[in-house]
Image 1: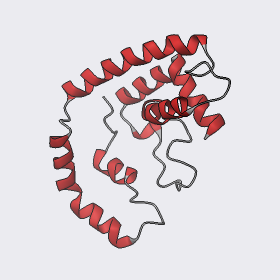
Image 2 (image 1 turned 90 degrees about the horizontal axis):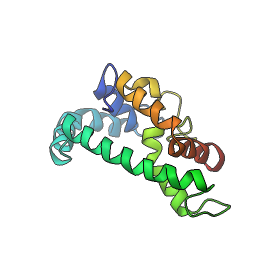
Image 3 (image 1 turned 180 degrees about the horizontal axis):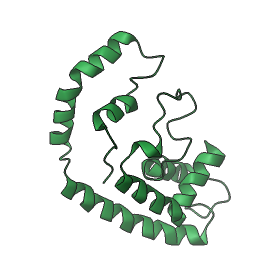
Image 4 (image 1 turned 120 degrees about the vertical axis):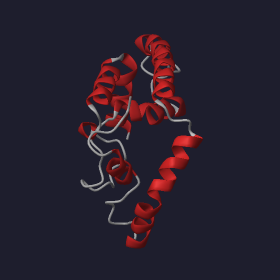
Amino acid sequence: MLVANKNSEELALKFWGLHETDIPPWQKTLLKLSFPLLKKFLIWRLEVSKENADKHLKLSEETFEELDKILSKNKFLLGTEEPTYVDISLAALAGILAWPDQYGGPRLTPESRVKMTDFSQEAQKTMKKFRGSTSGKFVLKMYAEYR
């Protein structure tokens, strides 16, 4: 589902700070050299597969449907007037699916900032669908107003 466009390896390296000016060159070199082994390890250890991705996306959609019901009745998840740690946690965890413009924080350089267009068309479609949901709009609002 969330497969990168063009070169997924290049995108992963970008995620891990390959273009960040604050990261020393020796660390960037080490990242590039160790990436193939790290990638294999993570795929094995996290059991990355199309089937698992689809299964977990379905589970997350079911969870967000429940959250949509809560958020359609309340400004924040606990019915408060101000966000709580629960709201902030949801925004942080669901940010990867909503992909707000502020995702990654204000210190990222333009070269390091991953944009939605860096992802596959399928991933962008899923992200846009989530952005249109009540939960997705909530996440975008949390990043825009409380980040």
